[in-house]
Image (spheres, rainbow, N blue to C red):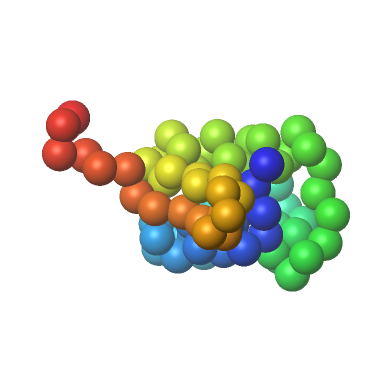
Length: 78
């Protein structure tokens, strides 16, 4: 599940504001801001955030001993 830190980092990689993200996922900027500050968000909305970022080319890296993270998908092979 996407974390607040991953959400902020993914937006930064894509150069999206909270408003840009809110428009893409139909979630209010207030809700996104609260989530990114550590607030709660419904699982369905967190899944929607993750799917939106993945469709935009962001790979969400799960916690694997080195910490969760994000990176852009390698598009060389596409």
